[in-house]
Structure formats: structure tokens, C-alpha cells
Length: 75
Image (cartoon, rainbow, N blue to C red):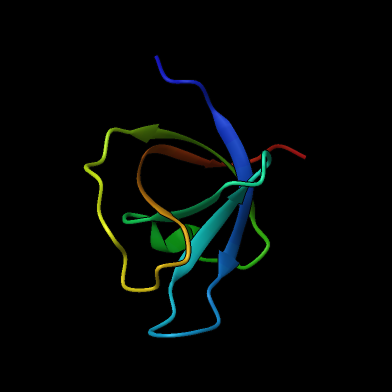
């Protein structure tokens, strides 16, 4: 079972746009599969990641990742 991480969803203000997550430990993550219901700037979420082959994103903002699970954070 993967460990849950937490972070804040951010809307990327440049290029073609898109969404990122700034994790609580400061990592910039660019999910390739953020569900539309979670596309809200400032939303605090909990999530797990699944393996994702190394790649480069169009926005080149953060590490491309694939979410395995995603939920709104408590509190």
C-alpha cells in the first residue's frame, strides 16, 4: 500500500495552463490525471502516486506524476 502524501492544488498561470500540486514537503508535481472535481486553486488534497515513466510535460513546471488515489484533505 502506498503512503498518502498531501499538498495544495495550484493553477499554472502560463503556457497552455494546467494544474499542479505543491506537496507539503515542497515538491512541485504535475499530475497527468488530476480529476476535474479537484481542479480548484488552493484545494488541499491527500493522494498516492503510482509508477509513471520519466517524461517531460508541456508546462515543464514540475515532476510529471500519475495519481493512484486522490481525496480532499480533512480540515
